[in-house]
Length: 247
Image (cartoon, rainbow, N blue to C red; front, side, top):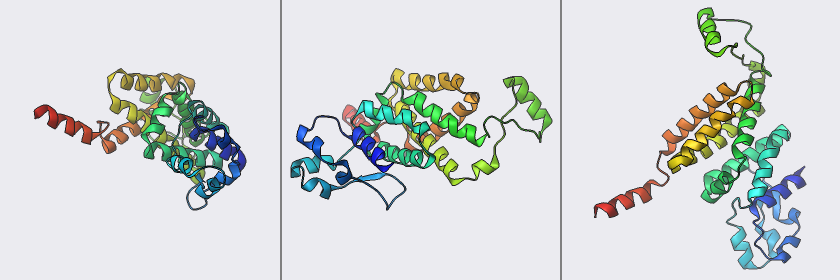
């Protein structure tokens, strides 16, 4: 319920460095459902006023993901939550990632972030495919035969009824956006970390029956992220460094 989600949200933004007295603040007073946006929660500054000092309030207002173990737990839980809860968490995590580089670094420091998100994406895609059903109608027998010879199995069929559900489309879009944004961040870092991140995603194909399709979809979204955001982590710093070298 909302109390469990609030506790998990508090867990991932709390790094354990605050004073012990701060842990006595009731969660229901400071973390409230956000009814003005799609899912998610908000931190109530007013709820802090009677419990902590003004200095603590100002530091918490600039919240980001800080707890590595906490976010690792949330990522593992995502695929086991109810659909509406999963959507809200995906939206919140994506908001953290897009707004806070610190949040990105904490997620990438988790050893299991890729397996958790890959399986999350695979579950949604399998749901769209109708739990692994294969196509009963072959609009192009020659194409289907060549595909079967190359892959050794029939291509999965899309369940149009499932795809028409807003919940499925939202989980599909949000999970792929979150995964591709994080992989794009790895790619922009360059060095061996970029290759290792893509190799890890490729190696996860074997964990799902439709793993090759899942990886191709993820990779296309990573390319889209690199086209949209570029391949340099911070273009302004790069240009300044180039000017200094030329000067």
